[in-house]
Image (cartoon, rainbow, N blue to C red; front, side):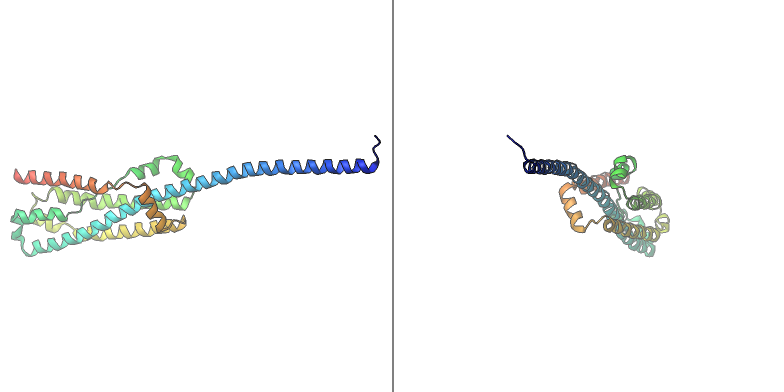
Length: 239
């Protein structure tokens, strides 16, 4: 069989065409394989980042609400303080004094998230946003300031309430406790809201996160602590 130039030229064209198609198909396959893996990896990291951010944001939101509620209770306590100031002799009525216990703020924070934030390298590598991390750290520092400046004074007032003189109760700077609590709560709220916008997290996202992953054991936990506290106060009174 004789091969003429036209036949050889056509064969070479077909060969090059097939080679190009094979090369192109292989290249696309490689790009799709590694490209898809990269996309999935980025998507997974983005999802992990969002979940971790919402975990911290929710923890700060809860702490902020606890501090807000404390401020309200300090306002109520101040009103009672004024009543005792007008009628100091009422201090001798133990039943009236015991009523103060129900107004005293009962503050407990779940600090497990803060410990994770401060000790886990995964937090820093996954979130990878210095501004967000600095803001979270600032919120936790403000919460610590509340504990240092307010809870220490509150603790002295609580456990000395049944034995203290009326003058000690009247001299307690409840107004300052309320004002400082409100200031801390406002600062934390502003910082946390900025962090939500920074990371593109909506209130709808936060609500879904809470319903999906957060177990509401806090009320039971606080109730149990309050019961222990009330029992201790009553035992002191009965002695």
